[in-house]
Structure formats: C-alpha cells, structure tokens
Image (cartoon, rainbow, N blue to C red; front, side):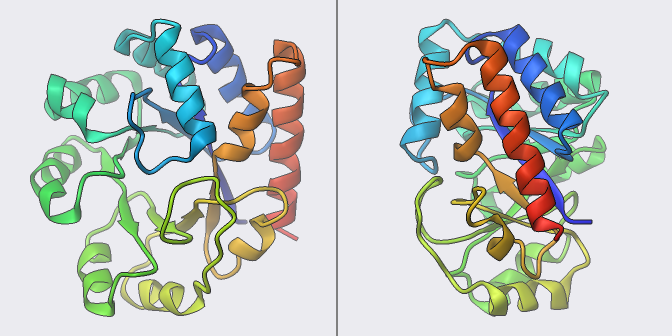
Length: 246
C-alpha cells in the first residue's frame, strides 16, 4: 500500500491543536507526520506554508513546543522534524538528535542542507538510530542520484519539480524514478505540489506522496472553527490515501 506523509506546521495555531491534528491525520490513514519547525525564511516552501510559519512565529513559537508536540505524537505515528538548517545549527545537531531520541522522533528533513555538507551530520544521526532524509531533484544526473541514494535510510524525498512547494508545476518523473529504483530499495516519496487532484498521478511508480500545502490551506482558513479544520483535513487525508491506492 502506498503511504501518505502529511506536513503540518508545529505550534500553529497552538500546541494542543497541532497534537490533535496530527493524531486525527493518523486516524484518517496518514502514515508519517512531517512536523515543520517554524522558520522566518522557508526558502523551499511556497506562500501557503510560509504564511503558516510566520503566523506560528508571531504567536510566539518556541522550540520547546516542538518537543511537547513530538512527545505526544511520535510514540503513536512515525514523525520526522522538517526544518531549515539554521535552527539546527544554532542549537547543535547533536542537541536535536538527543531530543529526537528522547521523544521517539524518527529523523530529520532539512531541505537546505546539501548532500555533501550533510555527510558528518548523517553519520552522527545514523549512529543514534535516526534518519536524515535525502532529496533527489529532477535535475540531478544519474551519477549524482546513484551517489545520494547509495546509503539512504527512512525514505527518499523526490522533489516533483524544480521550484517551491505548493505550485502547480509538472515534471515527467518516470525516468528519474527508474534510476532511483535501480540503485536502492529505500522507499521513494514524491513531494511538492501534491494535492487531491494531482496525488494519483504523482504516486505512479513510487511508494508514497508527501502533502503539505493542501493541508495547511485548511489550517489557515480563519472562517473555520478548530473542529471544522480537523474534520476537513481528515476528510482530505482519507481522500488522498484512497486515491493513491486505487
């Protein structure tokens, strides 16, 4: 069965809501939670996730809230911390690794950490039983793909197009998927631009999809109550999970 990874922004609009949303997504069929660490300049993300990041920071997000949420959800559903390298570097990757181990988090997704620069951190994390997710882009040549996926663990994040999250750009990924699968058995998940309309097509040939902006749009809708937001995000998750497994 193909898997569904759901991104939510930690602490938006508050800690308890993040916990309730993550657990509701689990009940709706989501397999992995990508728990976003709010950051002021989320370069790989589009306007929707950027807005959620900014609102969380304006609400006074502190890193302790990430740990509080993780403590409640990680024992119940596989959880990865998704964030930009600056906060991890500032406090120390070893500090976050120890916290991840403490709360049962599975690993890290750091989109602005290049493969070569990630090597020492990857070694550190893997030594603690944690995964640092590798990224593959449609622009990567065959030899680079082979090098990146050689020792991949957890899952491989295949970027659906060269751009930012949430856009409607399209790429033919069939050839790059074949190349990845020639060199690794690590699951491949497609992210960027995945929603209820595109999920079935983007799931073709891979092991799952990563959905962020489609969920965050619901969480940003101030016309909805918290209960309505959770109901709608759960419905969307069920729909996408069914669609990618038809």
